[in-house]
Image (cartoon, rainbow, N blue to C red; front, side):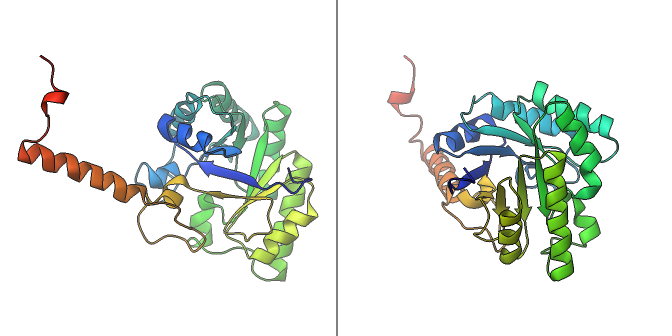
Length: 255
């Protein structure tokens, strides 16, 4: 797709119903992101997401039997401790969760884990830039790669990840010029989220693009629907009819 200029579309999903919707919409990749910690489980960051959470939600998405490539995030401390633990946890996401590939955050420091997982015949997607699992070190959700030296470091990370065997790199929260520069410099595709239009494709969190998440939203998010408002309206309609004695009507009853 990168070679032919066809744009790659990736969207998150966390359960069977949303996976069916996303897959029917024709996306290329479904990502079971550790963002589920914030948009589904109500945490303030992704750091509290566990392997059990990721296996459970990946398996739920997998039960939709999607046509799209199914990629699962490796959560905090599931791959940083040792390459051996990284392989074991990646294997769980494939064997128990049904993932086709795994994604992990970080640059050159994560090469031993990436190399070990790919040696185990599990495809790995990289993730550079604003990596949410590093939010404490970054001091918040801040744009990364600003300035020549910082940009050079991210490019070096991207090249190293390619050498280690990743098949795609997510670029998050970086200047658009750097997103284009990295994309043009490496042979594998990139998918951007807050990295400008110069990447090989784009990814957004389903709840953000559909109008299910709360304000404020990052600058890069565009709303494509107001599903939250529609759900609230449906529940209000039900509640109103119950209170007025209009539901259930005879058509909804058994004789």
